[in-house]
Length: 414
Image (cartoon, rainbow, N blue to C red; front, side):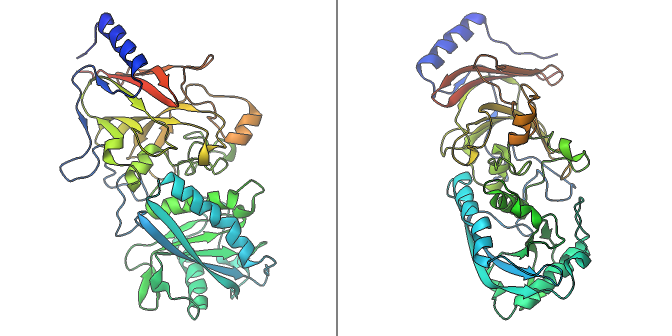
C-alpha cells in the first residue's frame, strides 16, 4: 500500500499556524487539487454516464431549466367537480411563492431569481380529480397520465396565458382534490405538450402536500420540485418504509426531507452553477492537506472539499450552520457525505456519513433522521472520520468564527 504521512513535529507547527491564522489554507503534502477539467466543467462534477436524469451528473440544459438569472413560471389554478375551489388564488400564491423566492435568492447567493406570474382565476377540469391517476406512491402516476393532466390545464388557460414567455408551468389543484403529492413533469424533445407553437417540457403539479401545517411547508415543496426542474435527483429512499425514507440524507437538504427546508448540498450547488469552481477544492491524488471551510449558508469562501475517488464517486466535506434558511436545522457543524453518480434518482446518490445517529424521537420528528450527523469540536461530539478501506481520514483541527479548519488525509491503496 502506498502511503504518505507527515512528521509529528511538522503537524504541531502547522496546528500553531492555524491557531494564529484561521483562514489560511496550507498544503502539507503533494496534492493535486483541480478546479476544472479540460472541457471547462468543475473537476469534481461526477460522470453519470447512462443513468437516467435527474441524477448527480451534469445537468443537460437542453432538457432542464438553467437556474441562473431569472427563471419564469406561470401559475395556473384548477378545480374539479369533486373538489370545487374554496381558497383564493392570492392565498395559494402567498402560500407557495414569496418564501420560495427568498429561499432561492439566499441559497443561490443571488445568482437566480424566481418570477411567478399568477393567473387569478380557477379553471374547471373535465373529470373528477380521482380519475386523473394520481396516487401517493412512487411514481405517483404514469408519464402519460401526468402529461394528459397538464395538457388539459394548459389548454384551458390558453386564452389567458402567453406560454412562450415562461420556462415552466406550475398547476395548483383545489383543496380536497385526490392529488396527494406534487410531482414534477419532465419530457424529452417531442414528448412534451404542444401549445401556441411551442412545446412545454417542464411543469410542477401541486397537490395536497402543500397544505401541511408546518411553517412555509408549501414553499419547501416548491423549491424541492424546482430542484428537479434544474436537474437535481431525489435524496430520499424510494423503496424504504415511509418512516425510514430519509436515512440517506436526513433533513439536511430540501431534496431529501422538506420538513427543515435545508439548503441544497454544496455538491448540488456546484452542479447548478451557484458555487464557483474555486469554491470547491477538488482533490484527485493522494496526500494530506489543511483547509478552512466556511458555512454553506453564507456567500464567499471555500464551501467544500471533495476527494474524487473515481469518475463517478467522491467524498465531500462541508460546513452547515443553523442560520438563515437553515435556521430550522437541529444542529450545526461539519457534514461528510459520499456522492455516487451511478446511483439512480431515489436510490441514494448522496449519502451522509453521520458522526452519530440520534435516537431522540422528538428531534427526528422536528429535523428528520440523521439530525445529529455533524462532526464538531464541542464536548460530546465526534471530531474525526476514517474509512480504512478507502484510505481516507478527516479530522477537525480548529474553528475560527463559524468556519472550520479541516485536515484530509487520503492514502490510496496500491
